[in-house]
Image 1 (cartoon, rainbow over the protein chains, first blue to last red):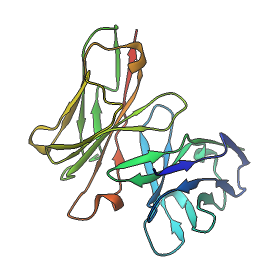
Image 2 (spheres, rainbow over the protein chains, first blue to last red):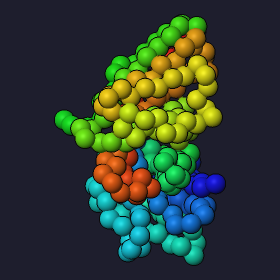
Image 3 (cartoon, helix red, strand yellow):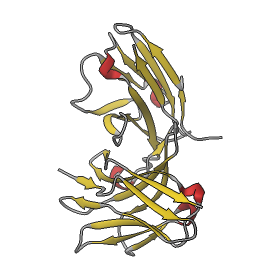
Image 4 (cartoon, rainbow over the protein chains, first blue to last red):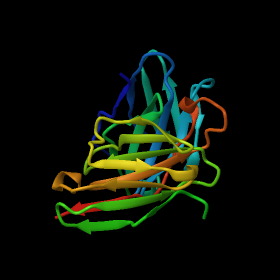
Length: 111
Length: 118
């Protein structure tokens, strides 16, 4: 079965510094990978996805993610963090008709 | 705003009562999904519709749960005889499904309905 793991419950970073939120996956076949962000008491907002092609995927709000097949990873990155980026981030893999989500990583950006 | 909408946003009910939630997908999206999210966890898949047909149901969806999507537009999720374990955020999502494989569709989520069962 497809699954993703987010090894960090929380990531702390100073405003202006680069950020990385980690995700590793386990799939059979081609991986279709997604990142979503969730603000308190809100639904999930789509950030970006990897289907095929270029390993570096660019998404919304200046986020990007790097697909690494050999390391089975799909880490979310941003060159310069903003306080407003503080939220809960989910990595997900497509499995048939559904998305299978990781447990989420809380990102805290301090000014 | 033409995003996915859900109603109500919050529902408090007593154990044993029935509740119904509504989801309005993005216009012209053929595919609709329901997920459940409990505190500290990622969303878990409940069920999936392609137009009005319910094509997949999770084992999480006990026989107290029923979902419909009449006419392939809005969807309802009903929980009968609610239990305290049903307390969660219920999320609806939709995706275009315009002839392409569902595996590459992007799912767009609504704001969710937070259910509290007392």
